[in-house]
Image (cartoon, rainbow, N blue to C red; front, side, top):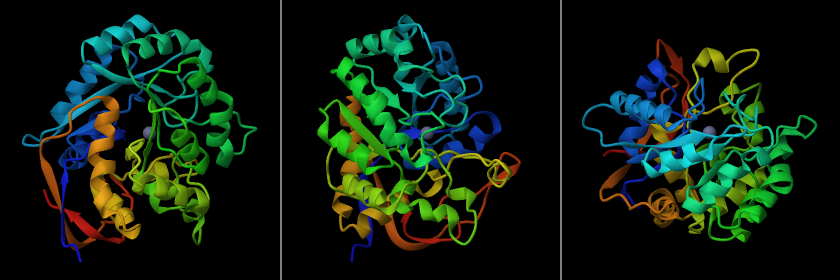
Length: 345
Ligand SMILES: [Zn+2]
């Protein structure tokens, strides 16, 4: 039995680090495991200019403990009619790695999101020209569409036309949750990829209702039925370079999750690589974890692989029920469970 695993240091291609006290509380959880992370721009107000992104990047660097080597990769929050010159300039200055499309009201702090994808077509044109990736929260926000169908309907109504209109645009379909998304990405050209979270590999929608309401398993896009989880596991562990690691770690204070209108998001950063390792081991694919976690992402983004390595040891690792943060607590993913692997360095 494998007792220790050495991997090229991974990157997280989708994370929410928040700001202020919460940023200070969560930054190290990501920075200790990952060399780089694509940081989501859905702050209040959202990060829509290169100056705001550079300032946020400085706050993240200041929040990470000295001794941890970590590079935040910044994203621009796309809004209706956004200035494409600002995107091009920010990208050329090395501030914006990518830009993020949130359909308006799709998730946490997305009220400023795009109301019609045609309103950002000039920006997409510019991004296609300069090779800047578009990151997509792929759900329609039409409330007549069942919440479990919003990703599949997004592919049909919006994503297919964006791909047809911008055939060379690099697109990352973020935190995919359905077999429909897996099939779409697999059948598209090499410029279309997807990130997959640890929680969507581990739980299906029943987890939210196991013996009662379980708000800590509520995230967006919401977990789907088992056949979709199985498709995601095959995609992640199958070695296809179009699929790579993105935790979508999204910390919320416990009282905002356990409420009459609880926030969407799962805080999976503290044991992220351990959680993925469990899935890959269950699928008999531990030898493919490094590709998914550390190689496919940088190759898609056109960035170098990290030069250093991490080690995981096989040791029973209890996950705390709560983690103190920002004067309150966060309930992490796998709270109260015991994982088989532990990140050591
Ligand atoms: Zn997210």
